Length: 351
Length: 228
Image 1 (spheres, one colour):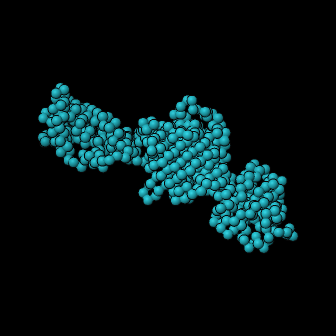
Image 2 (cartoon, chains in turn brown, orange):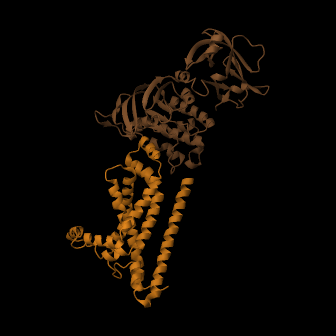
């Protein structure tokens, strides 16, 4: 997917001015509330008209003020998954799912309803009214409805922000698998760095209505380490724990991690703040933290005066955060060998 | 309760006038409400004022304007007369009077219904490939049904009670243009006809209560079908 945007839109005192080329299947648009992310979504989808500029998708001009082209929203084949599911309240789940499918030209109907219903596990919900669905179910139906319209591009406009944490991380695998299985490129709009790390490969950062930076989720997380309240969040997908002295022992590559909150069977996603990792130059003799990992420093980066230390633990990556004086005192340099201590309670389960 | 054959005709005529006025006004009322709620255009305030004017004007004034327009010497009446159509002092004039007076009530209710529709539902429908008329029929119309129902009931009830404008454009001809309120007005002017007047009043009450019940019943049915 190649999306070229060079537009301007004035809304009262606010002016959105974005110039960028987006390519790739999983792109994030990141920015604080009020930065203009949703306005950009509306402009790309044709629900709002730019004051001037050009938008092209895979070579086709969707909007061009100079040539007076403005393709109607219903002809762009760009679908939106909104923050609230926005299901049609007078239709049941099945009718909602098929709304876009029926309006899609038969030769564009690449994705079939049955395959999607299976993937999103919607079979038991089909005949239900949409008022009888939970928040997560509603968002799954909304995703299914958008995908069944067989779009060229899917715009996910903060689709998880109305959900609580547990639900949010249950929906993410659906969002990813649908796009991967059916090959639909998406723009994922959010102000959550964790969501960006889980959903996207590269990111367009928007600040005060301007395209501010083009980066990767990893780079963005590193840049924001010092100012973010939880530092850099290491995301670990762990599965099939063994129970050991009241703790859960998870395999993490060739390592074992002891976690106090992981009661789920099967796979779970954990976050570990870079600030919860304590580094030792030598093997400490006795320590209360349940995880002590020998690791090698592969890289160091600076973020507003803090030092991020990228560690390799038997092939697995972790980022720890220390202050400059600690780095100097311990004489940490790339290729140093260190010991990282992590308390079993430092892991937070996301879903 | 005593009803004369003329009274029965008046009751029938009232129903016919109110039903026709409501049915004819519905599509136009829906279109005007849609324009006001969803379409940005210059002069929207003017349209709103014009639509709401009959609410604030005395019905007699509306009747008089209609008489001037539709009468033999009125511009529209003149045109219609050339095509062999005469409206003044027929039941059709009563329909026009009722439609004019009840129209703002209809538009207001439909408008309220439309304003309660989340704009993002419409955006969702458009981005899913629906043209504007498709969205109008499949999203806006069904989601404003409550408003349409409320507006129709109000307009029907208002038409049943229409007096001032009707008496001016349609007259008070028993068996031809005399509706329930006009018949009651006739009875009220002769002291010996109290029972007859009261009988017609009772009929009015029964019709009004039935309309209100029907409205409630249909609204609940709508709510139930949505909750499934």
